[in-house]
Length: 111
Length: 112
Image: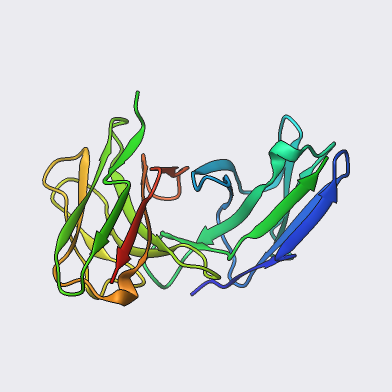
């Protein structure tokens, strides 16, 4: 079963700061997911990536398959970025092909 | 397109009562999932379905049953609710395995 660790658990930043959230996993994967959970509870998928880097607006996700590590970066952070960010990887050996989720990183961006 | 919808949004049950949570998707997705989310824990998979008429157990299936009689609907049943089933339940769907999952808005369930 894959294990997922996210850091930090909680993160407070000032508006405009560059944010980095980290995710490590234990078993090699085909793709990793980053999701965002809004303060109201809704969950949306941000990225699915298997190598290199992906960018969407001010969000950048990178993955290093050899090191089993991914990062989510937010440039020029804004209070509306305040949310919980969740990393997820395939659960090989468990419910085959389904996802194992990290506990999330709670980000609070102050104006 | 409505995407993934869940009913009800909130429910209070007494211990021993039963209920069914309904998930519906209009994206013609093959895969559907039921998760629970508890404080301090990541989303955990309860049951999932890889297509109409099929279901399979996830990580925490005990106390729950599911059915997928129609491709667009995935039902989660609690036959005899227990306080340990107090949680927020999310349904999700994806076109295939390991594709982007689309989540419903969640159902808050309180079992007294």
